[in-house]
Length: 135
Image (spheres, one colour):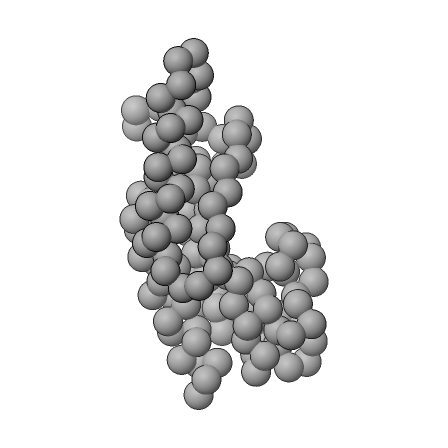
C-alpha cells in the first residue's frame, strides 16, 4: 500500500479509536505535495484489491478461550464466518492464535463499503461472537 497508518488502543471503545484514526488521516491528507491514488467512484486504490475503497481494515484482539480450547482457530472460524467476521492470529494472517485464546477479528467485507459500515459490522459481529463464547 502507499501508506499504512495504524491506530490502536486497549479497551472496547471502537468509536474513540476511529476518531483518533480520522484525525491522523486528516492531518496526513492536508500535507502539501502528498497525493494518494484515488478514484471518485471506487475510493482509494491500494495494492490489496480487498481493501479497494476506504483502504481501511478494522480489527480487535479478543480472548475467546472456549472457542479456541483445542489450541486452534478452527471452531472460531466456523462461528465467525456466518457472522461476517474473519479470524487471524494476533500477528496477522497465517500466524498462530495467542496461547490464552486471543485472536484478531475483523469484518470479512471491506470492498466498496464505507468506514462507518466497517466499524458497525465489527461492533455487531463482536457482540454476537462474545455471546456465543460466553453461552
